[in-house]
Length: 404
Image (cartoon, rainbow, N blue to C red; front, side):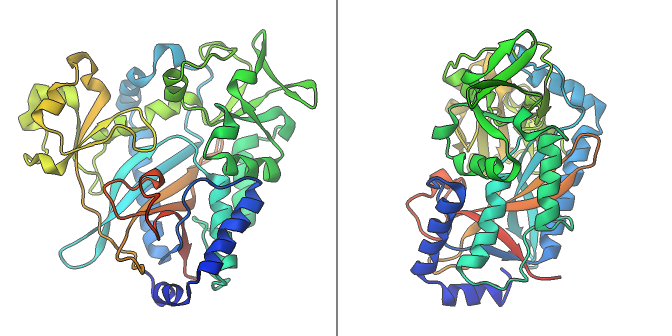
């Protein structure tokens, strides 16, 4: 989008520089990056990313400052996974936007979804920096938000993850972490913060305390950087040595309950120009004429509330598709207005859409802080990197800003 950076990058691109990027990422993350990395970063004016950051902040507070919403969100918590010691606010927020073209040619953000769950904060910082190094880009380009620098970004991230505990008493908790596509991200925290990555099945519970093995000794866990997704635990029927409802003597960096409280469930409660119309499927059946959704089904999406990476999204659902969902399960689905995003990134393979994720950090007792942006490039119906693996100049990317 931002000239002359965009046209200059396209003209100077070489496969050798891209190969260097991939090789260096593998070295820096001590593994093979299995997520498709786009051939290009995205160049944005700071004003656009500030607009997106401010919008995401407003949407987050619209939910968190609404006691009625928080009360309603209690019903999102699965009884067996309603964890104790819930933080008063989420430590992590991600808000995804696409860009739509207005009649006057300007661009406006449209919300895709928001989630109170951590994403690749470590890897994204490395990716942005490595684009600049591998392609010999202007070193004055920046990629941190809210006035953060690379140094203060990691200071804030350490504050959120560690909360002043010794690194050996903080663990990143995941399901079978060595086989997760986000393993490169985990290795960055290990190297930068000194914490261990631990498989949830390998925890040790003694009374209300949790421990893990490190160099053959049991180490107490005082804080958990939570990367475990509950629906994966349920889908794979994974057995682990504690009950989420136990009054465990442990802090959570990213309390599990916030994954449910702020999610696709939140969309019908939001009132903002950036938010598409959305309604719970059971409410749509009860009062479809009041839902405010387009009558044209090609303009609708059907989404399960609790899925990850775009699983289960149904485009242009028919009456038969909707009726096939059992009445007892319809509250678990969202019917939403579909938005056509503008392909704003010019590439050698044609104009490409960009989905921009603003990533926020919220330290205990602190304030919500936009920290960094992640970009996903795609030219199909689905923007997730898993859905664009066979194309070029698509996939996971970074948002670089021109110097102020």
